[in-house]
Length: 180
Image (cartoon, rainbow, N blue to C red; front, side, top):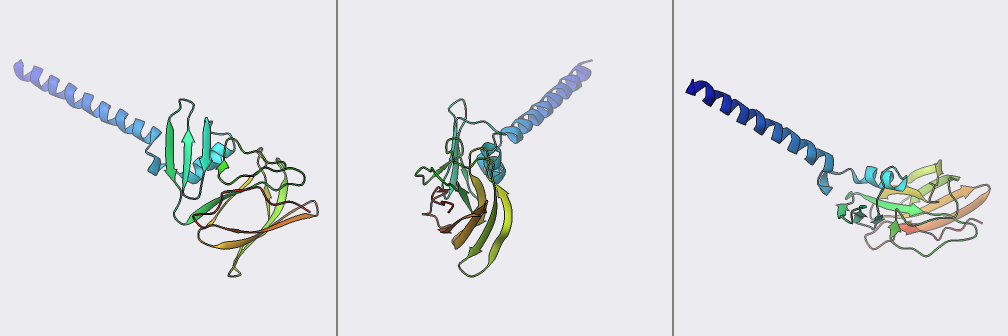
């Protein structure tokens, strides 16, 4: 009888521990430490409103997100890629250096552009590819780091062209591309 009770108690303990470990693992996967998060996907989800946050900004090396409970998390950006967010304009713009995924607003919302991007070595990254600005008026790009690019945007016969670079000291928010 004692042996049966001992075996039952051991069984319940093992099952309980197993349930705890499974639940704990599920919570960790759901929340996940910042380094396990797909940062590019998170940036896209915040930019498109799929994920709501109190604030989110992205500089050359990291994404900083504050949730609705005022909890702040910092995510490291990919080592080989640089984030650029461009708000082409015709009439109005704002000065900006570090892009706010939740605050920056561009003039040309949900507009389609033909985008061409060449680096200083003559490599073509995009050639007249259609790209649409989001509901915030910005188009987001991930480009290889530590290079200089010539970026050309065309919309309704108007053109904006600018030389931009993706070094650690460079801006992520580009609001200087006026269409003429």
